[in-house]
Amino acid sequence: DGEPPRQRVTGTLVLAVFSAVLGSLQFGYNIGVINAPQKVIEQSYNETWLGRQGPEGPSSIPPGTLTTLWALSVAIFSVGGMISSFLIGVVSQWLGRKRAMLVNNILAVLGGTLMGLANAAASYEMLILGRFLIGAYSGLTSGLVPMYVGEIAPTHLRGALGTLNQLAIVIGILIAQVTGPGLMSAPTRPVPPAPAPGGPLPSRDSSSQVFLVERAGRRTLHLLGLAGMCGCAILMTVALLLLERVPAMSYVSIVAIFGFVAFFEIGPGPIPWFIVAELFSQGPRPAAMAVAGFSNWTCNFIIGMGFQYIAVGQGGAGPP
Image (cartoon, rainbow, N blue to C red; front, side):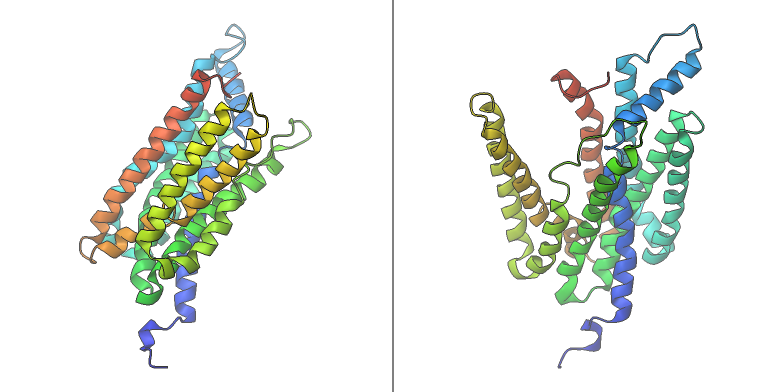
């Protein structure tokens, strides 16, 4: 067919890419898994706090303390990612890309074990430490996987295969959102709300992005996604402002949310993960991925730590 052998898609390539992006699926799952059981975790924190205070202590955990513990449980994930993202270059050069991804799974196992045993041990410190370790795992994964896939992919498929990293992330988020309410709705628990309306959408949009990236180009899709997100954010703001006077605006806000997520997955979601690996040669690539990863995780930490306080300050959902 006139195509050199190294450009062909082989079974080994498919297996290597699939195995690598499984780490990103774990990353995505741990992004979304903390949301559904929020009330259950807060109740566990309250019971642990009361048990430590003894019978003479207060009747419930102070709301400010509960808000801080919950915000820390969410944001510590990003702290682990921030720290480990600095080590992407060192680890990838020391162990190599493939071996580094294999060794990185130790952090995932330790983090999952601590989180799983936290309730039985009546220790919110174990859950927070587990979130930190799984965040450290995700920080390394966010740099190692795109770098590895970008280096083994044929040139004409590098963009398409690079988007599989984001696809795996949003599938992991989807799994967390779909399974979370089911796991929490035991007979002794109140039935939780349905998953977020934008939950299933990213996986569909990310899968279509695999076919768009090589045809439309990175820059075009990225700018289109940013412009669409801006427009949807404005539309959602206007709809929420007019909601009390025009009840139909609730449907407009739902459309705006779906549109925002869709435009995010067109460009700003997947492209930054692999464009850094394409912009730099193999020598400086690990350092560039470390800087990009640190930027991403810093923003995640700011959002994770600040959102709960903003929600409580605005009269939204907060601790009881």
